Image (cartoon, rainbow, N blue to C red):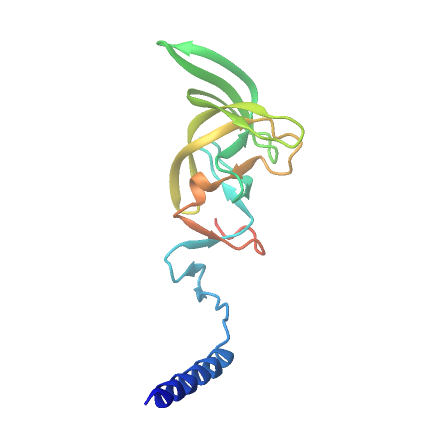
Length: 174
């Protein structure tokens, strides 16, 4: 009787090992149809236009899954106090057409941004942006992005739960 159990166990082990050799893992990409994926999230590219009211034309923004907080290019940053709270005055200029607007926003917080050469301290404010058909209120760090190709950077605080990224494409949103 013991030999029969051992034989059955032996045959079962051979069967399992034969099955494992035939099962090959595969990465099956999700089916994309009309810019939407089966998860219901919209697929966007590595660079997308963002609209910042009251600007009439969009800014090009890099989509960056490595950035926790989104960022925009600003000039003339002047902190001040209003009703006992910290506020910030700044200017934004659309580099494509020169359109310029001044903003006054309440400071949400000040953040340390880690850079390769040195850390920076930036003001964080809430801004409304239009990305695709959605108007989103999100935190943005105010940065001097003059040396960068794109005036905006969209980070995980906007991407998560809203979009899937395909870095091989650009400008999927209008």
